[in-house]
Amino acid sequence: MNWIHLVSILGAAFAISIGAIAPALAQGRAVAAAMDAIARQPEAASTVSRTLFVGLAMIETMAIYCLVIALLLLFANPFA
Amino acid sequence: MHINWWTLALQTINVLVLVWLLSRFLYTPVLAAIAARQAAADKLLADAEAARVAATAQEATLKARTDAFAADAERRRAEVQAGADADRARLLDQAKQEVADLHKEAESAAGEERKKAQATLEVDAATLAGQMAAKLLDRLPGDITTEAMFRALVDRLATLLKEERDRLATGSLQVITPGTLSDQDRARFGFALAAALPGLTAPVFAVDPELIAGFELRTPQMVLRNSWRADLDDLLHALREDAHARTG
Amino acid sequence: MKIASPLITHTLFTLGPVPITTPVVTTWAIMAVLTLGAWAATRRLALRPSRLQAGLEVIVDMISGQIRETMDAPPAPYLPLIGTLFIFVLVANWSSLIPGVEPPTAALETDAALALIVFGATIFFGVRAVGPGHYLLTFAQPSLFMVPLNVVELFTRSFSLTVRLFGNVMSGVFMIGIVLSLAGLLVPIPLMALELLTGAVQAYIFGALAMVFIGSAIGEASQREAKT
Image 1: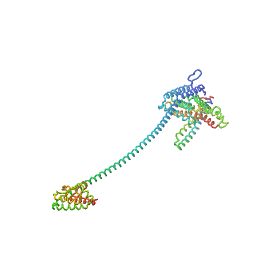
Image 2: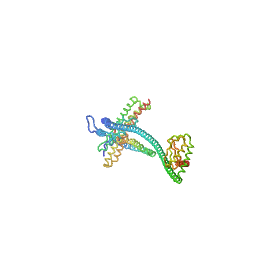
Image 3: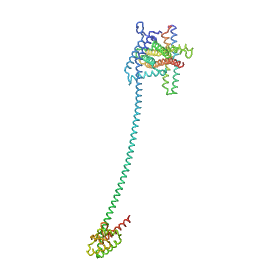
Image 4: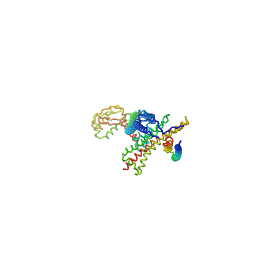
C-alpha cells in the first residue's frame, strides 16, 4: 500500500461521487420536465415517456463513464 | 488494461457473419412473406373492386331489364285496359242495343197483341153487332128492309160514274142477298138493276147470311157493297179511327 | 475479500496462435442459436401467418418503421445491419440471465467491434450515397474550420458508443457479482430485473445511434446533392 494506491482509491471514490451527483441532478431535471410535458399534454404521454427513458439512459451513461474510470483506477491502474 | 486484438478481430468477423446469416435466414424470408401478403392483399382488393364493378354493372343491367319489364307490363296493362274498355263499351252498346231491340220487340209484340186483341174485339163486336142487327131485323118484315135497301142500292148506282156502271154492267154480275129471294122478287130486282145499269146481262143471284140485310153487287173487277154488314163495318171502322185519333 | 477485475477477459484455449476468449465462444453460441432459430422460424412461412410468423413480422416491421422514421430513407438496405445490431446486442445483454454465462457485450473487445462496424458502415453508406469525393466534402460543412472537429467527432462518437455499451453491461455484471458475493440467494433479483431493462434500453440506444450516424452521413450527402 504505497501512496499511489491511496491516491487511486481516493480518486475512484471522488469520481464516483461526482458521477453520482451530476447525473442525479440532470435526471431530476429531465423527469421534472417530462412530468410537466405529460401534465400539459396527457395524450403525448407515451412519446414523452419513451424519449424520457432514452434520455435517462444517456444521462446515466455519464455516471457509467465515471464508474469505468473508477474501475480503471482500481483494477487497471497503469502506474500501480 | 489490455485490449485483446485477436478477440476484437474475431468479434468483428463474428458480427459481420451474423449480419449475413440473419439477412439470409431472417430478413429476406420475412420481408418476402410480407411482400407476398401485401401483393395478395392488393390482388384481393383489386379482385374485390373488379367484382364490385361487375356487380354494379350487373345490377344496372338487371335494373334496366326490370324497368323494361315494368314498362312492358304497364304498356300491356294499358292495352288490356283499353281493350277491356272497348269491350265493355261494345258489350254495353250491344246490351243497350239488345235491350232496345227487346224493348222494341216487346213493344211491337205488345202492339201486335193489342192489335190482335183489338181485331178479335172488333171481330167479336162485328159479330155481336151483326147478331144484334139480325135480332133487330127479325122484328121487321123482310120485305120492308129489302125494298128499302134495294132503293138505296139504286140510289148508289145513280151516284156512280158511268165507267163504274159500265164495268158493273159488262162483268158477270153477282147479286148477293142475305136470304133466298123468291123468283118474283128476283125478276123484279133484275129489271130494276137493268134499268139502272144499261147493258146488264142477266145477273146471278147468290145467298150470304153475313150481309144481314141489303144487297151486294160483285163482279170480278169490283164490289159494290150495300148492306148492313157494310154499314156496320164502316161504323166500326169509324169508331176505331176515332179511338186511334183520341189515343194517338 | 478479493474482487475479480471486470476488465480482464479470460482465454479459454488457443487455436494455433489465436487465443479464443470467453466472449468469442459466447458469441458463437448466440450466433448459432439466432441462426438456427431464424432458420426454423422462417422455414415454413405462409400467407396466413402463424403466431410465430406474426411475431417475427411485427419485429421486422417495427425495425423497418424505426429506420424509416429516423433515417428518412427506404429501410431495405439498412435493415440487415441495424436489425442485427439491435437483436444481437439485446440477446447478448440478456444472456446474463443464463447462470455462468457472462454477456459478450461486457467485454470491451465486443463493443469495440460493434462500434467499428458502425464506423465502417457510416463511411460505406455515406460513400455509396454520393461517392467518395462528395463524402469527404461533407466534413467541410458548414465551413472549412469544422474539418478537425468533424473528424474528431467521427472517432469520439464511436468511442463513446463503445464505452456506453461496455460500461452499462459491465457495471451491471460487476454489481450483480458483488451483491451475489455479499448476500447470496434472492437479493440480486431486483438488480437483475433492472439489468434486463438496461440491456433492452442500451440495445435500442445502440441501434438508434447507429441509425442516426448512418442517417446523418447519407442525409448530409443527399442535402449536398440537392444543393448542387
